[in-house]
Image 1 (cartoon, helix red, strand yellow):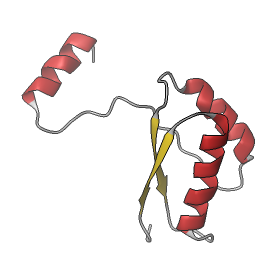
Image 2 (spheres, helix red, strand yellow):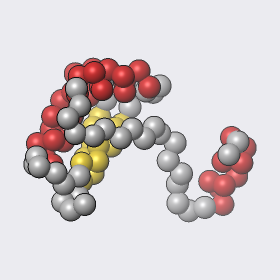
Image 3 (cartoon, helix red, strand yellow):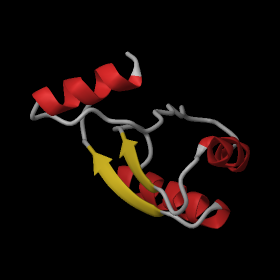
Image 4 (cartoon, one colour):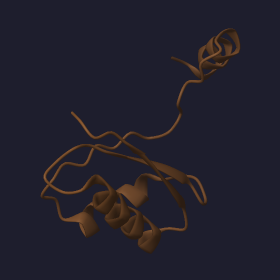
Length: 87
């Protein structure tokens, strides 16, 4: 969708269209390396990051806290948490 088309579509719809970057991170990764690569993709200054955690073998709140700390270590940002307890 071109920029003009996107603008027209957004004006006609009540539901906003996300314009950010979606990055999916699985388990067992080298978190520091992942964060360094991810922060290279960010174009905004002081971005807002929405972290989505899913049910797994580790507590989702603990996972969120770990990723939040990693993001904040690499870039100035605000990290929010969207979670669910079941897959």
